[in-house]
Amino acid sequence: MYLEILLATSCTALTLVSFKLYIKVTTGLCKSQVCLKGKTALITGANTGIGYETALDFAKRGARVILACRDEKRARQACNQIMKETNNTDVVYKLVDLASFKSVRKFAEDVNNTEERLDILVNNAGAGRLGNQRTEDDLPIILQINYFSHFLLTNLLLDLLKKNPSRIVNVSAIGAKLGNIDIKTLTVYKGDSDQYITSKLCQILFTIELSSRLQNTNVTSYSLHPGVIKTEIFRNLEAWKRRLILFLIEIFYKTAPEGAQTQIYCAIENGLEKYSGQHFHDCKVVSRYKSARDPELAKAVWEESERIVGLTR
Ligand SMILES: NC(=O)c1ccc[n+]([C@@H]2O[C@H](COP(=O)([O-])OP(=O)(O)OC[C@H]3O[C@@H](n4cnc5c(N)ncnc54)[C@H](OP(=O)(O)O)[C@@H]3O)[C@@H](O)[C@H]2O)c1
Image 1: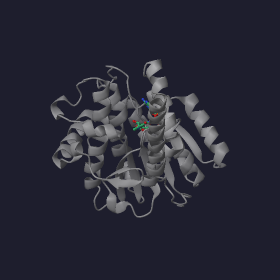
Image 2: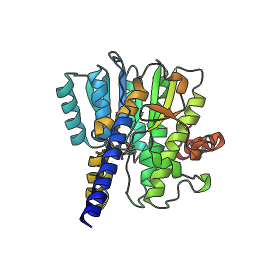
Image 3: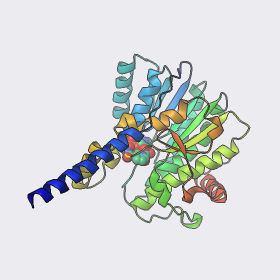
Image 4: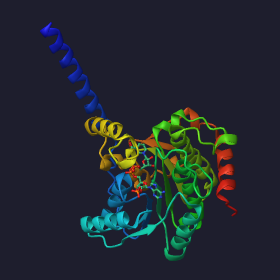
């Protein structure tokens, strides 16, 4: 009996250690030495999590970095911390609330009026578990923050992006695999998980259609799953669930600097232009999720998004 318990415990421990090793070995790292002096990068949701780590990396490489954040205090703290750590003084924050199209339009106008160039746009900000709240634009809040506002922001910044070879990086999630979009009910709230999954599938479909519309320009776009990462994204879960998930992630999954690697890679690695429109995971192109393989769906989501955000170009 004692021997059986010992054997079972050893097997469990071995499986867990092997799993941890597998995750560590397969975690993609961006090894690029690219210098970003003279370039400008804008990251949404850059005050914490993988957005912060992405901004920190770009600042280390010498870029002018714009942190697009909604909370002034948190934005200022992040900005100061990045400048202190990198000695790069060209790091600024600008305020935007992605739950409001008015705020996105004001923010984009400010960027267009004050920036001479934009080389990298990382649509990173995201939220989950906000319940059935609707925004002032009468949209489900998660869908608007995670997708519609990024769609609007990107379109409003396109002319600036086109001034130089540039990249647009859309942060998605592997949960998009489970998505199943029906255009007619796109903005109907069917639960937090559904909202999150739909928003992340929209980010991929947006990337596909965007890259096709940007053919023959010097702008390319990429979507990605960053991995499972210990960040504040789980902040709205019940306390016990949050603690359990963070504990498990701490043991088995990625740290924020590891989680930022794929979006940094998509933004700066040389020679990725031929993969425009593709989806990445662990710094590698991966095949499109089944849920994102229909180009007609990508087109339909684009057209519906234009209507919803009120884009008339
Ligand atoms: N962590 C994971 O395991 C995981 C897995 C797959 C995909 N992702 C994706 O990775 C991206 C980054 O998430 P993270 O894990 O780094 O989470 P995080 O630590 O919670 O960071 C999310 C960022 O988004 C910002 N944000 C939220 N609502 C906003 C709004 N209305 N307007 C402007 N900014 C807003 C947050 O600002 P405040 O701090 O002010 O709230 C924060 O800066 C998200 O798109 C997420 O869906 C994460």
